[in-house]
Amino acid sequence: MRVRRHPLLRTVGWLLLAIVAGAAASARAGNAFEERVGALTGYWLAHSANASQARVLRITNVIFAEPESVVLAGFYGPPAANLAEARDITARPEGAGIALDIVAADGARTTLVISAGYRMRATVKHPSGKGSALRFVRAALPEVHRFIAENPQPSARAGRRAAIELVYIGADDCTLCRGWEAAQLGRGRLESSAEWQHLRFTKVKLATLRAAFRVEDAPERLRPAFNDMIAEGLQIHGVPSFVLLVNGTLRAHALGTASYDTLVQAALRAAVREKRAAERS
Image (cartoon, rainbow, N blue to C red):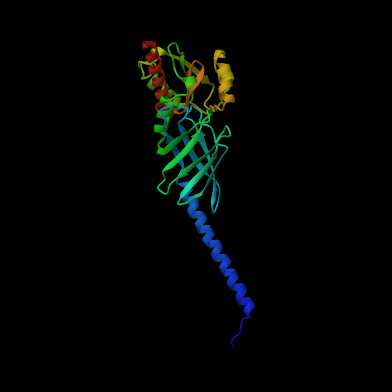
């Protein structure tokens, strides 16, 4: 015997199917947008002849995603030894592209527009009230390091009588530290380089690689500078670590030998070039 379904039951059934289908379509759309935003992970660099107008963007990961809004974690600001963590980065659809609404560490707001072909542009406001149009390009970390090293903020630029100091933080039970010392000190590359005669080198040894760095570990004359740098966001976690100072101002900081090569060594060479050029002028 055939059982006839009540028309109301059929209507409810169709409604449920429509709701499920709509939810599935929304989820697919949301996943697709999240995947597009996720492809932005990494470093983006906007070049400028003026270091204070250049910008570095680093997207690290997705924090939270909705169909038309994705919250991201990352860093944004002028190229500097300490790239500031953004307060908020939110991605939303912008036509066929993506818009990133960024609240920088200092509260400044910027919107970056990314085209469907992942070309990123923005107009950045500066303290003077003027704006500059910037074009961001995807960059590898060594390229970002080189730009930071060669385009310092004015306070970290080396003049005629600049005091350039490299602080090396290591430990005797650290294999990487011993390897760096063997390669760079004594007859190694650093002490044999042309930059060595313009450099004050300070070695700070921790009791063990597992010990946390404390300001008290640094020479007393450097403690005020380290206190200031830590208050401004410098984090020294692990060894070998390197801190390059110009007149007591942070020029570059790195953890590990790879970042020493791509950032600190490049910044040291650039600072010495600046000092020698000032001396010749």
